[in-house]
Image (cartoon, one colour):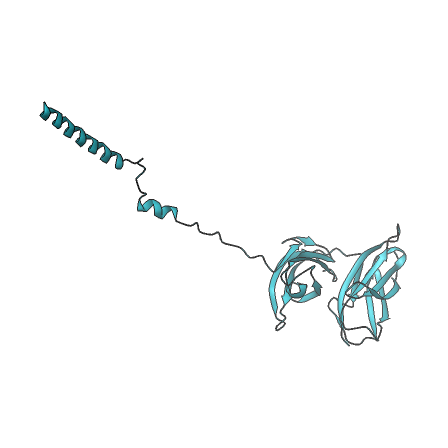
Length: 260
């Protein structure tokens, strides 16, 4: 009797040991440790996405391949030193036909916007033109951050065209006469020419007349620039007044540089 009880007790103990061992190896056991592969996979970091750098200067208008009439209106963005940049136009031979030094709304680390126009006599027939915008290096004056845009300039003639002074001309003798000349189709042959500084202040005004009113004809007159005109960039602007309300219209503006 005693032997049977001892045998039963031993059998039960062996069974209990087997059950505990099986539970310890089960996947859901609380004592199970994660495998080395699982630990390695959870510690992997994602690869950062590449970053893009915004261009220093853009030409947003006119778009590539567009057809534009004179004056050619241009606009874009810039983040240049002291917000300064230059825009110009090249003819098919690569010659500069008009250039302007302009200032964006901000720069030197703060992106800004810019808008200007290039005014030059239109071609005899539609012609390809390359528009450019760029920065002149403060270190050595070289061209940097150049962007280009290919367009077609139409032969359509504006109401007023200045042929003298030309866009980008340099005046080296303030106090001397300079020639204002061009073609215009204006009401009653009347137009006005103003000499404006970089801030838009008018320092000289001259009323002119064309040879014939209400049809394209020439105008030509010498105008005297004040002798105390400071060096810098100026706009020579020709325009007429609307017969309806007297407002300024048909502006044709060329930038010139005065050097004593």
